[in-house]
Amino acid sequence: IISGKGPDDFASVDKIKATCEIFNEAAANCKARGFSFGIHNHEWEYKEVEGKPAYKYMEEFLSPDAFYEIDTYWVTVGGQDAAKVVAELGERVQLLHIKDGPGTREKAMLAAGSGIMNFPPIVEAAKHSNYMIVEIDRCDTDMMEAVKQSFDYLKSSGLGRGK
Image (cartoon, rainbow, N blue to C red; front, side, top):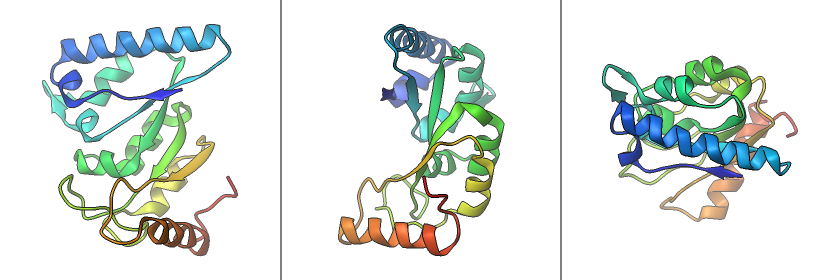
């Protein structure tokens, strides 16, 4: 089971802590029933809050039972280096979102390999990731063609690992 929260839930350290308590409760409930719980990010988890990126506080407050589904594009839009974040979070990164675009929330996404993202170091850092998921929130072209182009990019660039 994977969930996320909105920007207001990461606006202060107290809000981050309260959000992590909700995530921890979800992770405990899932674990007790044989499921896993993961957190899907957006850019707000990677913006500065009281002197450091919100995700650094999350690491202090989160149960080890919660894993990450890292959306690499939103990490980058949030002002962080996605490869460094993925490497830093290590084994907790079980799912990796492959998304590309111009690097802003306002503009539409692009097929992987067509925007600002530098995927080779990100994929290399995701040693513990079980799956790479192509995700395109919105695009100005045919969505299915953009997904196919993304798949072809991953395969032709050697980044696909058969997962």
